[in-house]
Image (cartoon, rainbow, N blue to C red; front, side):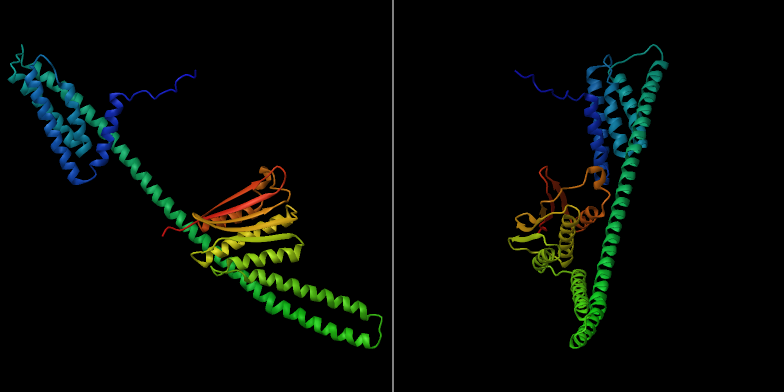
Length: 368
């Protein structure tokens, strides 16, 4: 038989009183609540004084006056606490005299009153200092939280600006490749083809070699166009993510001779085009890592629309992730995780003992 589970010890009266006092401090931040608790303080002094009078002067109720004194400090500060301490001592003395207390010397009640008042004032001083320290710490935490929130918002804004500049530069380079270098290579290929035709007409031995040059130039034109197409996909319309991912899979199959497939499950709906762009770039980086670093032979891209959001997964049969001590050195994972954080999505990678890696990005469905 297993031993019973340990239970937390019951809270002592001091802890219970401390917790109640802190709740009182929080409640007295409003002026109407403060006045209410000040009235409660006077009522407590009156009730304790009445009980002290009814029980006679032989029984001392001095310890019970700590309650209204503490409430007074928490409700309105040390000045009201000191006033309550004076009122408590006066009430205690008045009750004892009315109950028939007699002293051998008039110095005795004065001494007792001063001792009680001094004790109450020490409590007022300690409690007021603790409350002031508590409120100061709360204010520092509030200010620091506000500063961190503002700093984080500014950092996110700057990161978005940097990414927008990056995407704009991508488009500019893509246009330069498509309208500049590609056209230049096309013109070069036409000149080379014309020269090859002339050499072939003369049955020159160099004609076949020039034909190979033309073929190489045409391959360069095709590669330039593919690069330009990838760079010009810097901004994807929110309804064009599926088409873009289909094109990515086809491009991987054509360029790297890798069996890359794409499957879409459910109707994909995105709130803005920027989200589609980031998801596409995450898939693009994941497939690039699978081909270059993991040397995968099969890659599966999946886009699934679920009840709670959208899930993008890129799975491969490659060598898996790098060791943990080297994993943080690559920028690819950091960039993908950063893009996911910008659109408010979660990012995770999994590597399997038998080989293969899955990169998963989960985008929660926005609240209606």
